[in-house]
Image (cartoon, rainbow, N blue to C red; front, top):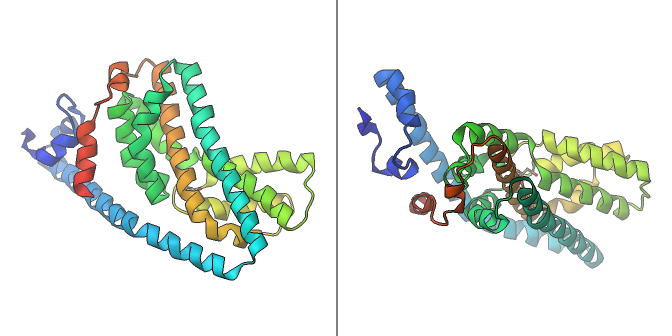
Length: 288
Ligand code: ASP
């Protein structure tokens, strides 16, 4: 009856994880067939994403090359500063805010957490999509960080849909940058409005590449800035998108650990095991 779980799928489901069996066992052969279709679909989509990931660096290179041949030198310097500020803010958020929150709220070791996020962050960085990374994020949360599936299967999809801290950071910095380019002075109430609308816009941002930039139009409108300002930063946005997506998925996993711990659904032996789910990484490498 359980023969459906072949060698490849066994890697994804370590011994003792019977949840998949239970689902299709209840509906017999029909359930078995449907489950296999979704499993195969998952493998095919992962393969497609991997193919795209392999050509993405060339696309980014040509995008940047085109931009730098068409703009003036002083704008390049300003763009470089904008880029640096966004990256710095994102790194501070990931390495300081997230790790402090994790330590304070759960007492778990932030270094262990960051080490286990490496693979997921790389995947998010290459795809620029929280949604495409979701299967990997979910596996990391359950099999590497030790969160129970009942918690992770709720928090990870929710996070991939509405938790976009990295996007909100980019939108805040971009609004201030565009205001400076157009020589517009922002007042304190404008800044408060930017914080509010950037938070709301990031919640409304879909977890796919580039949407954060489209939602930026909403923030610019709120403070009376021209949406044409987006054209200035669009060329460097791909690289920022890659970075902020990695921050977004790290946030999803951090919150999952906090919720799982508070609910007593975090297996700390898995969290503290440096070799947890190593076979999962081997499996992902095998389909690369
Ligand atoms: N690419 C981001 C994500 O998927 C969203 C964005 O900021 O454009 O998390």
